[in-house]
Amino acid sequence: MRKYMVCSILVLMIIFTGLIFPDLKYANAQQALPSYNTIPVDGTKFSLNYTINGGSVTDATIQAQAKSLIVSINSTKDGTVTFQIPRALIDAKSSSGQDDLFLILIDGAEVQPQSESSNADYRTLSTSFFQGERSIEIIGTQAVPEFGPIVSIVFSIAVASIIIVSFRVRYNSGI
Image 1 (cartoon, rainbow, N blue to C red):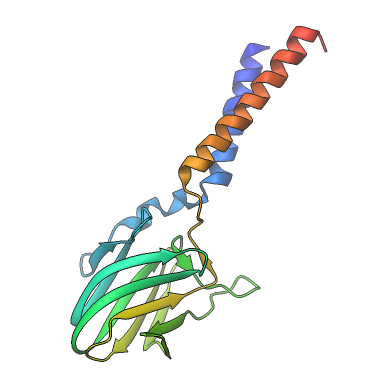
Image 2: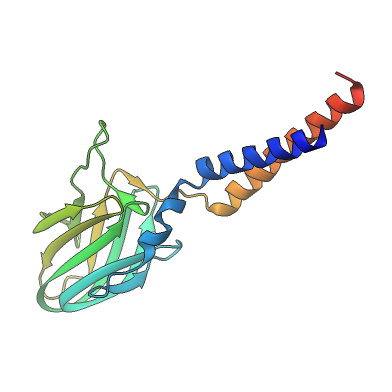
C-alpha cells in the first residue's frame, strides 16, 4: 500500500511539474546566439538577445499585465535594432493560435517592423529608430505569468500533502 502511495505521489508530482512549469522546454532557448548581444529582462529569468546600430540597449522590463516588453535605448543616431524574443517571455497569437503581429511603439508612436520571423522558441523582429528616441515597447497577446515558480512549488506541495493525508485517512479508517 505504501509503495503504491509513493508511486502515485511521484506520478502526480511529475504531471503537476509539466502542467505548472510548461516553460521548462524553453530552458535551452535561453542561450544567446553568438552574433547577438544579451541583456537580462528585469524581474524574470529571461534574457533578451539583440543587435543594434546607432545606439545601445540600456534596460529591458516586462509588464505582464500590459503584455508588453519595454526596452530602453540610448540612440546616438538614426539606426536599427533587432530583437530575438523568447516566446515564453512574450508572444503574439491570434485566437486560432497562429502567430500574430506585435504592436511596436517607439516613444509612444506606433511603428511597423522592418522584418519579422519566428521559430518554435523565438520571435525575431527588426525596426528602425531615430536619434534621440529612448523607449521601444513591444506589445503582444501573452506574457510571462505574474506568479513566479515559488507559487507553483507551494501549490505542488499543497496538492501532495492533500493526497498523503487522504491516503492516511483511508488507510487508518479501513475504507
